[in-house]
Length: 390
Ligand code: TMP
Image (cartoon, rainbow, N blue to C red):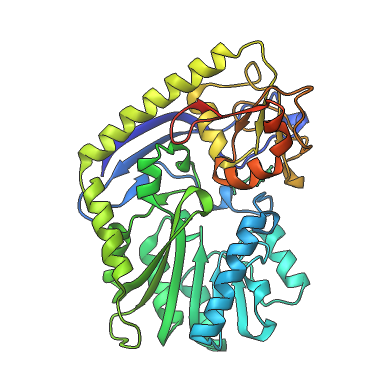
């Protein structure tokens, strides 16, 4: 593993602070990333224990995003129509945004964060509130084998990939398919979206790395879709090598070619990326310094913005407060930068000149919502793909 990126001391990204703890010392860890030349895998170098990150205080809820709800619904309909599964298992079922699209008898959720698992259990969806591992996989296999295993934005959060795929191999039926969805390394690197790196994102997968990793478990990618969610993701359709039902589609080779052409197999690409990250910080700070006397707020107190704010050392001196729609985050403070998060209100040019796009991955949805603000001369600041005012 060769280190190529250092984002400094960072707090845990989703550890929003309550007022009475504002003066308490925060636990920080060094956020750096490396490249493995053997399997092309990019990962963070120091990890935080899963119990510290994924517990009954987990704030992220997929159902709160219209974009995610709609993406899951479309996929669920496709799965029902094409694969007609008797049992679907979702690893990381969060608050049910995906599994609620299925008949209760035909789907099982796995969600270690108890506050989230409670939401699906309450609606009588079978949910195991455990971390994904071989023991759990064997337990579910006794109920039935899964014809579809789905996992969105979860496998990249689990450190021991060997155990992940061993457990999947136990549960997946003979001709079953595994669908994985995670941020795309190609998108992250080409957009200088360095905020994809935070404690929970242990890995940022590329097709070339995932292909190598799963091959050991006799699995192969047979189809792939580029998604716009989470700042550019890939959805991989995976089957057992022995299963001949599905042909390997051109989409896979096309993505592999794109990744190789961009240089994802070469360490020099990551070193270049690291330089761009430094220059991105410089440019973003220049923008903030130039706008010193303006009313600037943040829009979307994302885990990603935690990386940006702490790496660039942007705090309450630059950004007055953040707006966010997630009830759990409201009246809390962002980790590290300690900027207050307020309940979202439509932006108004009367008291806001600029809004820093923490949730840049929802730019389209947000710009649509804030049409009036933009029309009246309100502006956004973004750092992706490079720092600029929009
Ligand atoms: P994510 O990037 O991790 O999906 O988190 C998105 C965050 O942005 C989440 O806390 C909700 C917030 N958000 C808003 O506050 N307003 C919006 O219009 C959108 C789309 C997201």
